[in-house]
Image: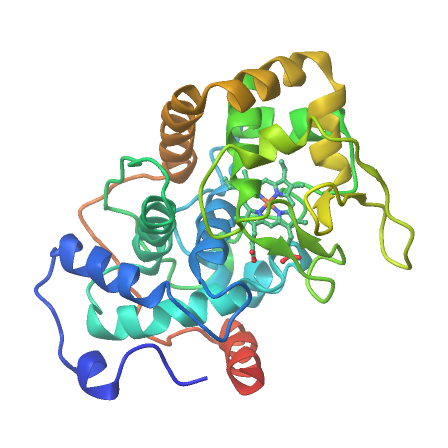
Length: 302
Ligand code: HEM
């Protein structure tokens, strides 16, 4: 696959602070005919979420500041497998707008992707800085494990400062994208329109999902809509746990409530761990060391 923008585009730099120009260029790379369902949107949403979801409110560590996934300590975390594709999609944008930090670019890309795929406007503020080395990488193990249950979800998301309603609202992003057996071990999409932001994830929980019989990890399947759709054990936990299910039912029936609540909670997510200081440290394009290896490998496979 050829790079999304030409060398000429990449070489012409932009005016510092012109975030609207960055937004436009992110929107322009979402269409990726040779990749997955034809869009980089879902994996960009996942990149913004995983960049932020390492936050721990007790120690005020982790979160979207730093863009630590450029380093092996965070980029090589098995929980982040596959996100090198998202980072690679954004590299021409970084080359064209080298003044923006990776941490701002990754979160802004998630926000633009949500909007372009038909989702709500999510508030976004710049000011995240890039780590200059890997000394501040959060410990591994802070992101959720799809093989687990409701208590695990609460353990992980309460640590970030979210409540049950916010957990369910965030999980609605699983209307987007798909699982890849060579990344997480799980396989398949949750919805029939994985590149459209919608309430489908909640609506589909009303269908009967059965354990998939296969070699891979436990996951659930339903074929009522003519294709195999999936749920992770953690998704099923949202249906089975009464306190979570109350919100699943609400969002299945009330699109506006979901869009409003998702916009609020995604904005909160990407602010986790952000401390705005005067020194806006933007790492130069392709500055990563160990992390770069993963991107190069992904590029070679495309
Ligand atoms: C509730 C706990 C969560 C668990 C256990 C979980 C787990 C997973 C797993 C296993 C995948 C498949 C990765 C792959 O194989 O490529 C995935 C994909 C995805 N997740 Fe989550 N996730 C959770 C929450 C979230 C949240 C909060 C968001 C965003 C708000 C999100 C957005 C996505 C998206 C958009 C994809 C599709 C990525 C793609 O198409 O490449 N997830 N998630």
